[in-house]
Image (cartoon, rainbow, N blue to C red; front, side, top):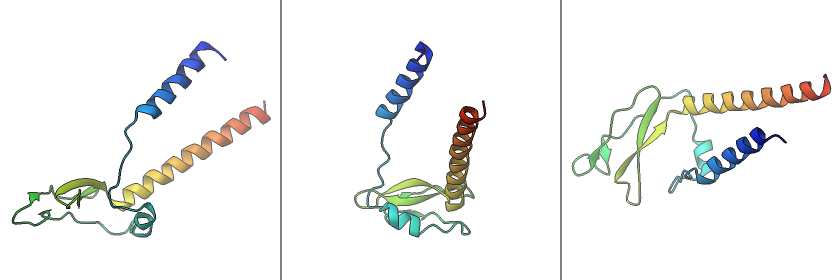
Length: 110
């Protein structure tokens, strides 16, 4: 392997090792997948935990919304709208498939 390839591989491993993990406190991945509704726009709460005593959440738009989270649901957490999540997953799958197909094509048809 060339030194450039080794450097690139080491950089990717270092990036993956030091990337902070996203912790969805209290959210189960299976429940999140079951609750995806790509044809609806989710709304943000006015404040977390209550509009009177809580911190105000920013307003939602077509691309993102905010959800109450934290130990006692007192923080507003950023979330992507479901259709954006589905679109990003679709693009990621298409990109990975195209890379695999092109690698196979390169190795077999050369």
